[in-house]
Image 1 (cartoon, rainbow, N blue to C red):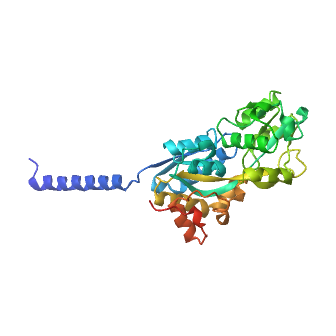
Image 2 (cartoon, rainbow, N blue to C red; image 1 turned 180 degrees about the vertical axis):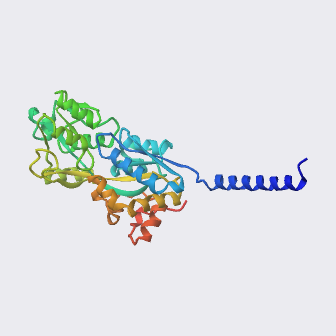
Image 3 (cartoon, rainbow, N blue to C red; image 1 turned 60 degrees about the horizontal axis):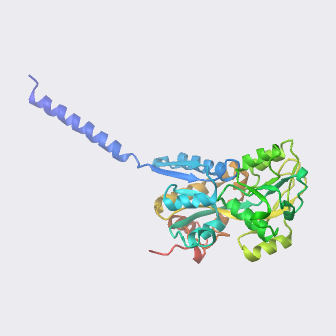
Length: 337
């Protein structure tokens, strides 16, 4: 017969083991699944989203962060996915971000006041790439041609149509608009099925690098100071930008063009602590990010809140910037609910 004292000792040991098991389970952090929606795989958003997700997974695993970058149709789709809760974070053009927040333009009557900015990123550069065989030298020459304005509903599509209308004087009916991803546009141009496309993204953009390195002779259209002034009167979100010579193979001269800043965005529903740690991890490792993709060379802590529309920052981001001595403009401070 087993002695009473032995039974008590065994029971005590089992209790200790159960307690230890319970402690180990309770100590495991709850998973913070973060879907980061981006854009076309041939653009800049997707590779940068992948880089950010990998950094957060590495540095914030102890907080349960499990981030993944997902390709998408671009800014408009991203904003809608943030609104519906299908994604937690996104990279988006700031012009459409403002329209979405305020319920204007393409989002007329449907404001998303839960939208928040985490940090500004780089300027999305307008790159009108055309084949030399098309004889397109100006925006007006796109009349009647096969031109890809961007994926349906994307920020690139909005921008392309606005630029063609305001600067080129072309209505939608004046050209044959296609709606492809950047790599698909490059392939279509190489196959003689497309005369040109607009690729908006950080420079260099992968699909633009691909078409310049191909056997198809292409060039970038330029935008004069007068073109910029005309556009800025109606659409004040653009800045002038120069693509340096030799950014792309065979591009031997600087190209004057335009750009709109993009940003990392999220919903106000993300916790302050989580967003604080996400943005802190970014800027604590900013040198690594800058070396990981050329577009990220533009991103610095000093530029984090520069050039943004009056869409509120997330409180977690505001806390981090203030700790770092960054002056946060009043129109970016979220109002208490």
